[in-house]
Each structure stands twice: as C-alpha cells, then as structure tokens.
Length: 602
Ligand SMILES: *[C@@H]1O[C@H](CO)[C@@H](O)[C@H](O)[C@H]1NC(C)=O
Ligand SMILES: *[C@@H]1O[C@H](CO)[C@@H](O)[C@H](O)[C@H]1NC(C)=O
Ligand SMILES: *[C@@H]1O[C@H](CO)[C@@H](O)[C@H](O)[C@H]1NC(C)=O
Image (tube, rainbow, N blue to C red; front, side, top):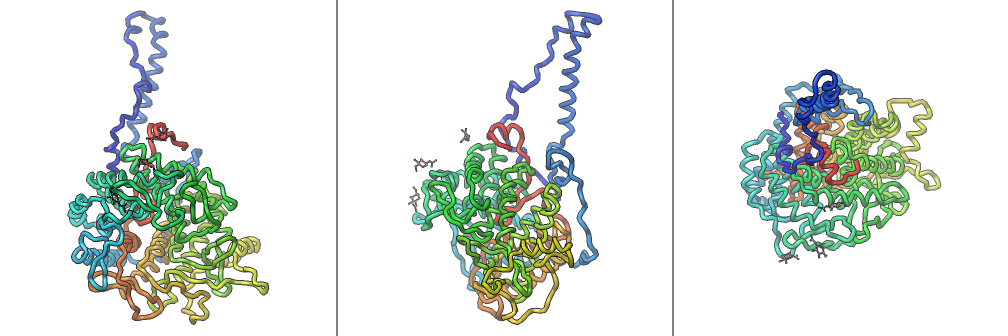
C-alpha cells in the first residue's frame, strides 16, 4: 500500500524566519584584493559557503515524506541506534491461501453490516439489527458511517468510500435543542474517524470536516481547570456535566491524539494549546500511588477519589499516554513516563491470579479494597502492553520488557478463557473472579509476588504463574473460578484488538488462530438478517439478542479481525497508531518551527 502523508501539503505557515537565513556572500570581497591576501579574505566565505552547501545537500538528501514504518532503526534514546530484530516467524503460520480467504470472509461480514445500516438506517447513528429499525443514540450525525470510513478504505472498498463523502459533507454538526454532545464520544468516533479516513485517503474535504467539527468542540476546554467538560452544545459552546458530578480520567485524556494531529496538519495553535494544557495538569499532579484515579474535579483539575482501575473510566487514558509518544515519532517522553508509571502501578497492585487455574486478571482498587472484577474493557490492556514492548524495544530494561510481555500474554489468555468457557464461544461483559485467599482471608493471588518467587527459583517451567497458554477442557461452571456479573457480549472489540497487537508484535500465530475462532463465534451467534446484534447470555445457546449494532463493531471489531487475517501489514504498528475507537492516525514528527511556536517541552 502506498502511504500518503497529505498533511505535509497543507501547512501554510512559512517555517523560517528571515533572521535565520544565511547572509548572501558580499561580492565586494572579490574585487578589493588579489593574490594571497585576497585568498585569506575569501577564506571565511569559502568555509561558510561549504558549510551552507553541505547543509543544503544534507537536507536535500532527506526524503520529503518520512517513512515512519522504518522507525525501529531510529535511535530512540538519542544516543546510539537500536539494533532491529526481525520478527520471529515460527513454523505455526497457517497457509497463506487460508488466511487470505479468511480476510475476505471478514470483509463480507463488514459489507453485510454496512449494507444493513445503509439500507435501513442511512443518515441515523445506528442500525437496530433484529428489528431492522434505526436510532439516533449519539448526535444523529451518521455515526456508523463515519466510524466505518477508514475500515472501508482499508478493506479496499474505495468506490463506496468516495460515495460516502457526499454524506459526510452534508452533516451539520448541530443538535436538537434539548441535547448536548458527549465530548468523549464525539472526539473519539467522529473526529478520530474523519482524521483517520483523511490520513489514509488524502481526501481534503475530510480534513475540512474534521476542522469544522473540532472548532465547534474546542469550547469544551473552556472550564476553570482547562480539563474538557462532559457535554457541549455545539451550537452555542455552552457546557454541561450531563448529570455527572465529576469527569472521568478517560474523558480528560481521550482527545490528545486527535487534536494534536489536527494541530499538526492545520497549523492551528489552539488545538495544541488546549490539549497540551490538559497534559500539563497531568504532569503537575502527583498522587500517592504514581497512578491516576478514575474521577477528577472539573473546577480544580485535581483527582477526586482513590479508585484505581484499568477498566471503563481509565483504559482509554492509559492508551493515550503511550500512544501520544508513539504518534509523535517517540518524542513525547513525559507522556511515556506517565504511561510507564501507571503500568508499573497496575502490575504491582492490580494484577492477581486465581488459585487453581492460575488465571491472571486485572482488577480495581477502591479505597484500598480489591474488587476482583474483570471487565471486558480491560481486555484491551494486554494489547496496549504488547504495543509498548514493541515500540519501546530495548529502551525498556530487559526485566520490565519481559514482565510487560508476560503480563500481556497472561491477561489475554484469561480473557480468551472467558470466551472459550461459554457455550457461545463469546465472552461476558464483566466477571467476578474468585479471589485466592489464605485462612485468614488475606489475598494470596498478587501476581507480582508469584512472579518474584518464580524469578528467585531460577525461572523454572515455561513461564511465571498465570501465563500458561494451554487449551484445557472447559471446566464445570463451579470450577471456572469466576462468575459472570454481566453475562452479555455486545460485539466488543477489546480482545481481538489485543490479539491483533500480540500477533503483530510477537508473531506467535496462536493469537491469530484464536482471533479467527472468535470471528466464527460472532458469525454463528450474532448475525441477523440486517446486520449483527449483541447477545444477552453468552453461556446459553440459542440466546436472546440485543437489538443494537454498535458502530464500534464496524470501526473496531471487524477492522482488527480483518487486519489480523490479512497477510499484508496494511497498517504497520510503527507508522500508525489506533485511537481509542480503532481509528489509525499516522505517526509524525513535530518540526522545529512547530516546537518553537507551540513552546513545546520536548
Ligand atoms: C444550544 O444552543 C442553541 C443556540 O444558542 C440553543 O438554541 C439551544 O437551546 C441550546 N441547547 C441546549 C440544550 O442548551
Ligand atoms: C468561556 O466561558 C466564559 C464564561 O463561562 C465565557 O464568557 C466565554 O465567552 C467562553 N469562551 C469561549 C471561547 O467559549
Ligand atoms: C498558547 O499557550 C502559550 C503558553 O501557555 C501562550 O503563550 C499562547 O498565547 C497560547 N496561544 C494561543 C493561541 O492560545
């Protein structure tokens, strides 16, 4: 695939100030002297010109469009280049033809879902897949269409993509009188969707629409603290908490990639300023744990509770910490530091294993109490860890690299087990894990304790506790060591997303195979006449369906499955970064004039 970086074409601000230009050599020195004296006079000029020429030749040597897919070769520590280890290609890879066929099958499913939406719910947010109805459950700005644009492009449906632009142009970004727009959702679905489609296709009108929308959303940062509000009236810029008392960490951070990429391709300072101000708040805030809690005070801009989580109110924020660093060609180190601090907290405090099956899970701590709950949303954590290991490479010390990768594999396995244990082969929304307690009721399952013990005993066996990948037979319900709290599967992407990241970064084909198994279960249990619908009881077949086809099914679930099956590296992990709704944005590098103009601390 030819990668276009059209954003280089739209920057209109002249980069160099007049003062930085080299003065032209004065011609008088040529005339005024001759012989040896003349040469001595000319000498500084000759040296000067040689340097200037050298600089120009060097600069001309640089390709105008940088290919960030080659990033592993770049020195990321600023000292010496990192050796590049080609990915391990095991013998387990399935035959090419089979995977190509599978990719095509995923594409057919995407077209089935999109066709249902376009014939039954065109212009609305989402299709109702069992009744064939339609709904405006976000803002009525054709949510499913916008969310599907980049998937269309990636799957090669270019005519359909171009046809859709006419509908995108017609969206007014206004709301019915009585409503507010949810900032988090609009940024990650709409803005992310438009920007990703623009970056992939280079269609300028998509950038215009992204800019139109971002301008309307910008007043969301007009709060006392500068942290974005929960809801915004896109007509007036008025803000609303939409019934909430405080704002989640995910809500605060899940806009950094979109607005910063937009600042880069439009040259608009305010997109950078408003979002960087939020990051500044993060850098200034210290917590007793080094990790940020779930809820924040919008007026004071400070954390409000002691609830630490990798789930609903946090997981997307964790993604944006690492991914900002990846997106800016691995320059935003402060953001990376926050990521590493948070992960270190999570690994040390939120990872537990069960007693018998040794299932590794991530849980929450609320005011010092463990909940031992595992959310499906947290199943994106293993993918994030894998992306971190992949992009950090050897700049992450060996022990931490191993630790992160073991954690990723163990967590992904547990999420996978919550799928394979069920008769539908699909996993529940949330489970209550059976805590491993000693006789006094003290928790025994802290993963880090087991990990350290394993290290001390000479790293015996195939890996630390909680990381085995065996395909065991499905245990009786009472032996599973967890019970579903929310027994439904709503076509969610988090686990296939993690499988995609693990497959790309480790080249271990078990992740690909497992992803395909999930796809087959989706086909078998969620397909309807019009599209796909979530199911209400994962351990019951047939099961009642939920009359909903969330737009993320097309934006994320099917996209990651397609990329997982496709034999080409269509969206290389080093050249693109997925936002929290699966929209890939290109890696770019701030130029020196941008760094100066924005007053960046890089
Ligand atoms: C949003 O702003 C418009 C224009 O000022 C106004 O007519 C509408 O009532 C506002 N909506 C809400 C929910 O406040
Ligand atoms: C920000 O809010 C203040 C008061 O709440 C208001 O006066 C001002 O016009 C707002 N600015 C923008 C850009 O919306
Ligand atoms: C951006 O922020 C910097 C530093 O806080 C400030 O000097 C500058 O005026 C801001 N620019 C805009 C356009 O808000």
